[in-house]
Length: 290
Image: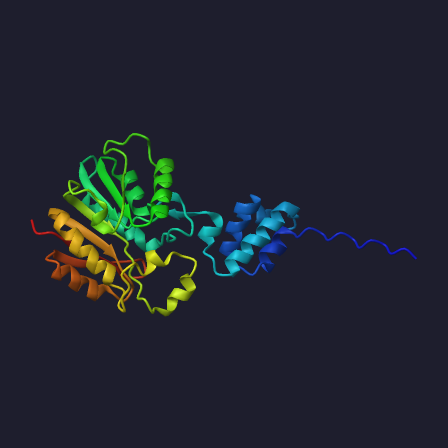
């Protein structure tokens, strides 16, 4: 007797895939839109719609990566930051919402249409530098990073997101260690911004961050308190601040007091912390003597 062929498997339905994929609903919806072009509204209207085979395969692969702990932003290839869609990859940190505090601080201290010299140290994807440049077109914005791969990605983001002609000129890119990346004639700066590495070398949370670059998390100068890079940055950066210029640094959730002490020890004034939406101090800010 000839065996009858097994019936072909039915394609998964959109609603079934969202329920069974093993992801948080927001992540599942983001993948559904990116891999299959299906919006949340379309899902609600037609949860019984079948997924085409090619889309189902892409969704399975993408969901597997997210379940393995890879950041959703790497799987998608982009991350929203201050209204901008930035390309991201494993050569840079995924921009976090708390880093937008640096942009808010910059916009408070840079008046529209006023020229100013601004530097983003350790720019990564270019998130802070590009957001500031987009909002303050007359500012001359510099950005540095010690990773050539990160700097290339930041340049690509700037080319895509910023107008070809700005009153403040194109962003200036510098490869190297903190201020050593810049030519001696650069500056003095009205505003220095940085999201530096601040994770302690033995921090147990590093395992959960294994997909992101260790250089951007713990830095080249590893330390038990995570502040070695901030100490080096301040030594190099404070002398390049203009009189009355401002400096703002992101730091860990439990490092505010230590960072404020470092800012005071560096001779800066008006030292204070900025809090994120959860009320946690995440940025230390201070001003050079007038």
